[in-house]
Length: 126
Image (cartoon, rainbow, N blue to C red):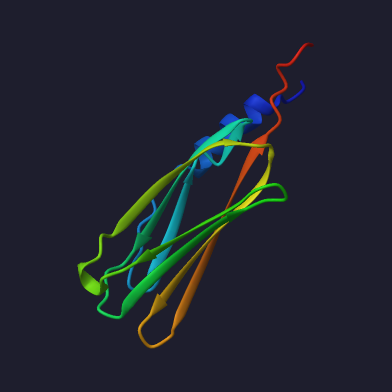
């Protein structure tokens, strides 16, 4: 029996759609959904930051061979929201990496990475 990209994608999405929350031991986390989609891809990226007085900035970078975007979010220490979400639409096929960098007032940096994939749409003219 042959696996189709749709079946593989459904399994990957099912396996990777857990809610992620930052904790004191891991002050920043990133959740991407869906982990696999078809071009043009639409994804939601949610960052989770454990509130702390020293938190000053969160930098989110999304890139692949054909795409780059970034967003810098100022944080107001322990008063900042725990989560930030944004959507990327109409992404071309490719393998993507999300890098979240949390910076504190003392210059400490915490980095987390998450990957997702946008597959070519195989429905064209078979």
